[in-house]
Image 1 (cartoon, rainbow, N blue to C red):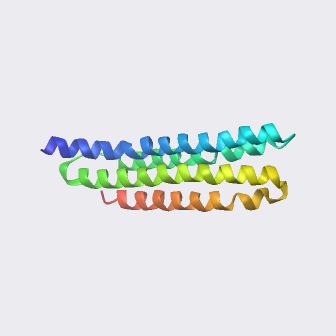
Image 2 (image 1 turned 30 degrees about the horizontal axis):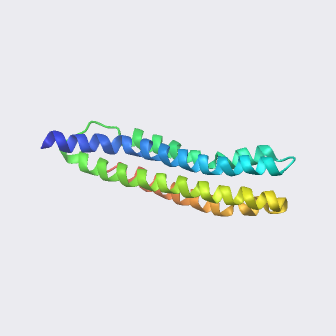
Image 3 (image 1 turned 90 degrees about the vertical axis):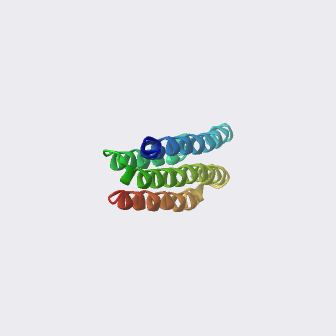
Length: 146
């Protein structure tokens, strides 16, 4: 039983990276598809479309930092904490990256139709990024006691 608990702890250590990567893949792919579509309809501004489509990639970076914070000698006492923090923060990163990709895709479509609202169209994506940062900070704070 103790080995199983330690295995769960190890899974929790690596969950933020894996789940953050999955979310970043989904988010960047969603925004990237919108960027490609916008490039077909416009004559310029391609760089900003590509830049926006990369925004959801930050969640994997947060996952990597959380993983390094949780990566400590695993015991039965700290394994359940590492599992909970890792899985829950990883899920938050996954969902924030996926939904940020949708926000970015919408911003690309809006900026394609009305270029003067480019900066304002990014506000929803920035708000979603803020929630990813909250999950990241909470995971770092909690991991100090895991």
